Length: 354
Image 1 (cartoon, rainbow, N blue to C red):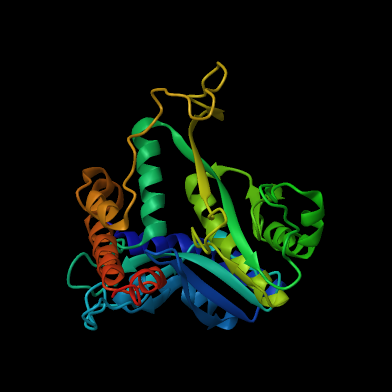
Image 2 (cartoon, rainbow, N blue to C red):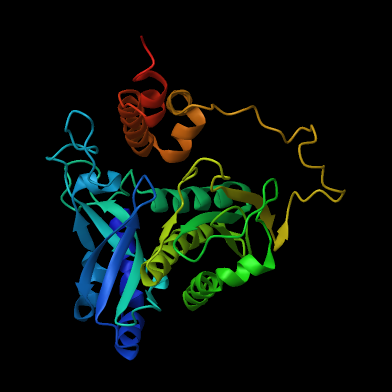
């Protein structure tokens, strides 16, 4: 039986001529081979474009801890197996090849992860902590089992900070949707949208919201494609911030006194080109009680980590290896937070007694 790594190589071999020709045609000199860590960071190696055929066949290799950002726990041990962790293979998906619009000499592939051919256990199998590959496998299994395709659309909010981009304010009045403020940040949204369109992201609308916060939306699609585009969108925002010499963050609460950055995810199941469960009646009003409401989620990271650790659903969706790695990472993060002193604690207690 052909293992997953071999099957990926065979698929890449069929596309190798077309990819090599395109790389030559667009004069790309360097190619990033990218994957997404368990924390949503993009990690990559750069390979001269002359070696694209070799990389399509053999992939590139990373240390086993790279799936968790080569991060160490509070005891100094690398997540993902320590310093002795075996390397894994990063295999490009040919259909994801694109040229970076801000630097046409550089292209990129999005990749999936596998155990090496010579691994002691499960050689050539999908690498458990591969977030992107796991999502794709789960979607394929869902469609095979039910006939439904999961589509998603998201609404990413980002906070931009820099001289000349502060909105005019009035006490008690939101800065949201003001046309004048949109003009003020025109250079930001135009660059982001143009780069996104050049990378085949179908941008559909956007607005200015709270102080420094811009939301630019793109068309919904199959959930794995939307996930790829969200990661790419974030990279675009960071590139635009570099070019303009300003800051950008996706942090949920970058500063007190303003709304945080959210990212609504809208999910639907499709069959035969139609949303299979769209309610033909009017949608319920926001906040209206109904069967679609969920049990409240934990409000503190510590409680959320333990709920995640105990969730059979999360374990089944992510697989044992990815679930355990993410659980351990977040438990360590919570322990570090509990051991840290905050500005609030100093302000409240440092000089209060006697």
